[in-house]
Length: 112
Length: 112
Image (cartoon, rainbow over all chains, first blue to last red; front, side):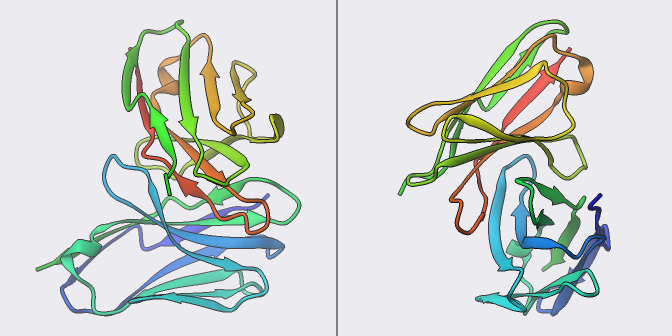
């Protein structure tokens, strides 16, 4: 049974800092992995999708990496800004199923 | 391009009642998934529809049911509401070749 864990649960950093959010999963037979951002009371905004055959994806100040063998993904945010404050969720799509398993998220606060 | 839209945004029901939530898929997306997100938790997979057929189901009782229509829009129905059904219900559409999920803003259900 796939389980997804995100560490840390919460993070507070000063503006401008580079930071790394971690996501680990127990079953390496994944189809893909997706990172999302969620603002309070809102839906999820897709940030990056990494297919199982890929090692990383980049979009602007965001870079996500995937290491299936160790069951880990990291989301790197460069030069953080107060507007980056949100909860970041990773979701793992397992091979042979149609569902994504989500972590409980990392709540990020970037201080001005 | 129109994104995923959900209605209603908020609703309040009493225990034992029934509720129907609606979702319009993003243009060109043929697959719809529904997730339940309790406060402070990651989303939990309810079920997925593809070509008007249920394509996979999570660990939810039969009183959670759904439909997908020929235009790919979808409904989530919950019968005999319980207090624990209070949550944010999220609809996501996707295309089968990438599996990338695109979420709506959600429907916030409160059961009293």
